[in-house]
Amino acid sequence: QVQVAESGGGLVQVGGSLRLSCTASGLSFADNSVAWFRQSPEKEREGVSCTSSGSGFNYYGDSVKGRFTIYRANGKMTVYLQMNDLKPEDTAIYYCAATRKTYCPGTWQRDNYDYWGQGTQVTVSS
Image 1 (cartoon, rainbow, N blue to C red):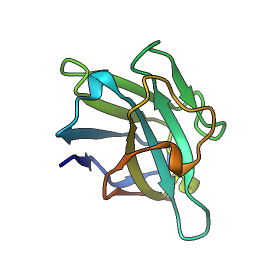
Image 2: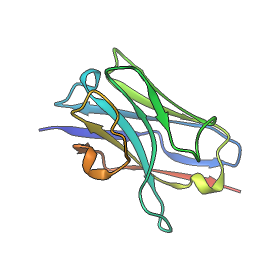
Image 3: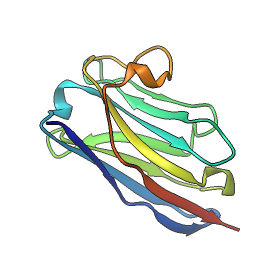
């Protein structure tokens, strides 16, 4: 059984930084593309970033480009999301998702991802 788990959320002030971590059991992230999504009560679930296991390319949503960085470590078994210059609108539950594909899907549709974590809360206070 595959389990995906996020950690690293918390409360941070505007302009601060947080690093989220995503790990999995029963699944090798080295062979799968992994993405971060987020959802707040006021918005639909939004694709934040995706890292491809095949090409090594990374993709970002427009709202986080230049501020967030996705990367792999620990033999590609952990996927991190480094979030800098955080803004109140970044407040959301952040979800990690993995797909059996070796590339990042062309759209952020939830159905493109096979495994999901439970989410971790990020709150940016002003």
